Image (cartoon, rainbow, N blue to C red; front, side, top):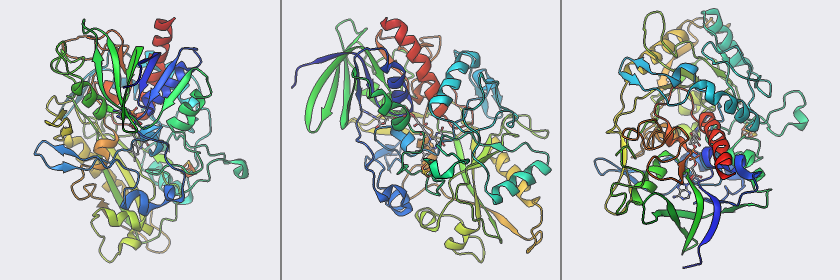
Length: 523
Ligand SMILES: Cc1cc2nc3c(=O)[nH]c(=O)nc-3n(C[C@H](O)[C@H](O)[C@H](O)COP(=O)(O)OP(=O)(O)OC[C@H]3O[C@@H](n4cnc5c(N)ncnc54)[C@H](O)[C@@H]3O)c2cc1C
Ligand code: SF4
């Protein structure tokens, strides 16, 4: 075993939370060590291959988890520098102001956060700048106030999406440009880092034009001499001193050997499932139910959003290359005929035949998979699932991850799907097929083999919730463990509720907020 090396701060995990925190602390001059279990995503043609990415799952972890029936799960999650942001769709939303308060849903209550939107707002603005978000304010009817305009103009709609946006507007909705972290310069396309391609959502960006945590935060942080990154460094356990109030050793498996590091401050940011697993694995005499778990909430209240991918097939083709530019939030908090929240409508990247073969979409009558892929608009619908203590991460006897999840609050999501169905039936008639152009909506089954739903893990959050009361939360409002004085968590684990928009910008903004707190503490 090597000599223990001491740092000011150790950050475990380099995704949306950990990567952003490293960036926030880099210029402090403090000695910072990032420990990342993965390596850099190799830059190769396969980055943009639907077969490699979606069919062969080349970049997914090969780990096998289990569900609560003991059935194997092959999680769609990625262990690399930059974490899951290397693969994300870069839709960078703020939570709504109301999401920070208690909201009544048909299926129960979405609990309030211990901080307000006002407290996070300046960090949202900063995160949008760091992650180069492209968007336009005041289009989205539910958007909270912002301290600054988006730093870049919105990504334009291609003709089919513009047509759809016009149709939605004609029906009285307020469609808007999805805020996106892609480095697209549409005024000088020959200088644009982003080439506007069809392999963005779910794929790593071969030309480093996606605003991911590696490109925007980890690489810039490493320009500072005081920041070190160790890749292929899997943290297996955290050890506390005799008081149990301080993490004194971080145990790492790296390239086949065991190493130990220590720091004044230890920040866990392994993603909501792995962070909970790490704390549970770190149980000791002083923390018999898992580190920082006197409340018993560590691993519980797992959320991942209710998500559906729906293909709207039309007789006319959809030649769109980059289709994630449009969103609808008119039903986010409800509608005239339904007083409860329903959620958010947007798009996934354009589906292709190769990818469809990997799933099991319902086939539209008279269409092949190839034809379906060429004629579909591929919607992504997100609704909020509520924190249920029985939806949780536990460990089996060998210390492997067990994920138990039963969806809840589904009524609003079903109604959201119905809303979209009706909207699609009311599209303007096309010149060739008239009103018969729209064929119908078809679900893309997200259950591939024995996999858990793709999005179920993609939006993982809630397993180490923050709150005021140490009896019902594991972290305080600064994301410090109530039970341990030098332990913080900054990935999606801290969410007490998750709203119905994509989580990454909130994780990034919160990491910047915790960064300010840590700078003060360390000084
Ligand atoms: C295909 C896909 C599309 C998505 N699209 C969007 C989108 O458009 N918008 C959006 O907001 N969100 C999107 N998401 C979700 C978004 O990527 C996540 O919410 C975000 O990355 C979570 O950040 P995190 O810091 O919690 O964890 P991660 O980004 O997952 O980072 C965790 C890091 O910890 C490392 N790690 C784990 N365990 C250990 C350990 N024991 N030791 C050392 N390191 C460890 C991992 O390798 C990883 O690098 C998408 C996700 C996927 C998979
Ligand atoms: S659309 Fe732009 S950011 Fe996305 S993968 Fe293609 S080049 Fe990269």
